[in-house]
Length: 113
Length: 115
Image 1 (cartoon, rainbow over the protein chains, first blue to last red):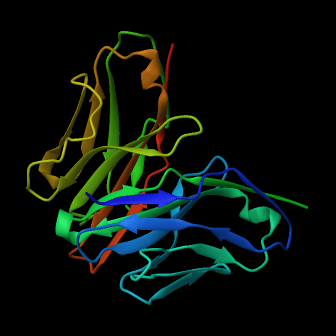
Image 2: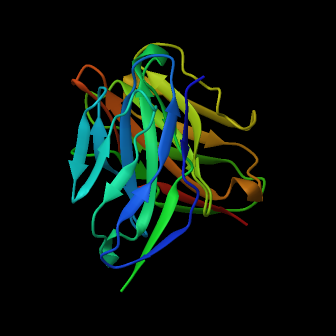
């Protein structure tokens, strides 16, 4: 069945460091891929998405490229800020399974000044 | 409304009591999802409604949990005979393929505490 595996946390970085959070997926069809973010005390919100192979999603300085050949959707940011401290969830949506969503377990990021 | 709303925002109950959690999805969204997020854990899928199709209940942890969606809009998640391990944040999300996007939009959640 479909699934998402993402890098275990927690991750602690200094401000302005480079961030990578790995995410790989398994899907029977051609899924859409997402990164959601949950800031402390808030609900989940969409960070970025990509709907087909080689698409790059980007938002707030974060980027992720849909790599079909490696079944990956790694999240990157060149220079993190304290305000990026949050939990990040990788997810996929597969219309072949009726638009069911599959989430990774989440990666907690803490950025220290 | 403009977004997904959930009520109550917080619920404290005693072990053994029944609780009902409500979700109002974005108007026109055909799909509705319930998840559970325990402290420090990821999202646990509970149940999924898509239009008039039979719901996918494969994530419900026990027969104490049930959900319904009336008129294809509002949904209620019911937990009977609550246990302390039911304490978590219950999240609702909606999406719509027909809207040209499969993005899920989340509500703020209901924090359930079972004493």
